[in-house]
Amino acid sequence: MKSVPVLIVGGGPVGLAASFLLSRQGVASLLVERHPGTAIHPKARGINARTMEMFRQQGVEDQVRAAGLPPHHTGLIVWAKTLAGEEIERRVPWRASTQSAAVSPVRNCLCAQDDLEPVLRSYAEKQPLGQLRFNTELESFDQDDRGVIATLVDTTTGKREEIWAQYLIAADGAQSRVRRALAVEMLGEEDVYDSVNILFNADLRPWTAHRPAALYFIENPHFRATFLTINAHDRWGFLVNSLKAYGYSAADFTPERSVELVRSAAGVADLPVKVLGVAPWTASAHVAEQYRHGRVFLAGDAAHEMPPTGGFGLNTGVQDVHNLAWKIALVLRGLASDTLLDSYHDERQPLGRAITEQSLTNAISMGRLAKDNTAAGARPEYLNEQGMIFGANYTSAAVVPDGTPPTPVANPVTDYVPAARPGGRAPHVWLEKNGGKISTIDLVGNGFVLLAGAKGAAWRASTAGGLPIKSHVVEDHAFAEAYGIEAGGAVLVRPDGYVAWRSAAMAAGPKAALAMATHTILAQ
Image 1 (cartoon, helix red, strand yellow):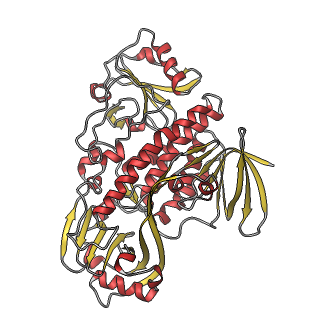
Image 2: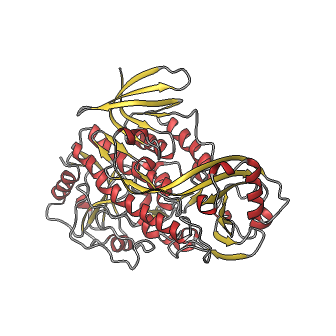
Image 3: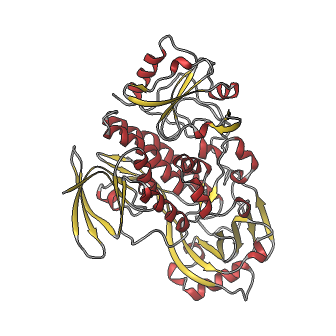
């Protein structure tokens, strides 16, 4: 029987990210995907700045941006009665605003999933430790306290094979076979509204080029629909929501009827339209009660299904495996106890629930759950969720508290105040280096990193408790102020870019204090 440290089930963005994240942590993996290749429909499109920070730290940001749209094509959100008709409202979302540059050196990106996945696949395949196998389906699995035995089936030949893995990551989507086999309880609401995605070719530039937007919401008495920008030229998505509420079913969306609806929403009766695909789907808003089940971990849509209103599904999933990969790596290398892996659920599941609830609230405010002919628009928080994007604050055994309270914010959905309190994202600060500038974001994001103040050289350590640590002494007052430390203080940042521990001032025995912190974090 063949063996592999980690088996990844699912070859979407979450599974592909898990593959290259594990590879870059020195862990071999096998990814299996039942489809013959990557996505053929756009599906998710918005990649928020936090996810783009991770892509930057892993060395794949430029490739993702090259596959996506330049920012000037997607700076607005527009509501209109028809695309060619009366405009109701337009907004500049925070994510596309210049203020976002104060929070991160990285901008968000619009890259349709069928353009994104080939980039992530290519990057994962270039990593020497990651093996990807398409046309391969997980048929069944069983686990004990030593590992997981999985039966795989080649979908082209029917040939079966057994694989033994120490851990299994289930990134197999909303209809996850792994989750169903585990009989995981889901918390929240299932099937909250139904929709159809129509992929089509048409040149919409006469009605969009002067107001480039990521989304054009059409408020029509007969249906609610959205034009989704893909290439901002002749390739678009068309989303029709709340089918049952408006008297439709998925069967009504024949290619001919789909063309009629696109023309009606565009307000151009003779618009040349070529329908490329029609994909019905149902939005749910529920989250797995438990993300860890022995040696099996749920990630992405297998762990949480959320309405797309806010664009958090793909991002939350990719950030799930960013949280998990380094923990698995340390356990496999014998540097951490297996109980470190419990912190994956402790950190990601509460956040998954919060994001899912806010996505559902967005959907309700936009009339997604019922026929609603009230005023068009969405609540003010919609696409202004910087608190949701950057403000996660983990509480788990993988974080050593320093006794400071959370930074108060008026609205945790929209408001984010950078702080290096343990459990939070290590803030972005520009630093001088060799006559140029570098962000603290570029100093972290793979292994553990110690950032010390100008008088913190005594903190320097190549290892602590056997854990390799890269150290930087930062002689910059703005850094010390942003990170809440004195000149002799230090902050330890985890491989996922979150603060694990902080000492505001120099300790009597700095190396011993750091070793004690890592001992706690790794559950040694």
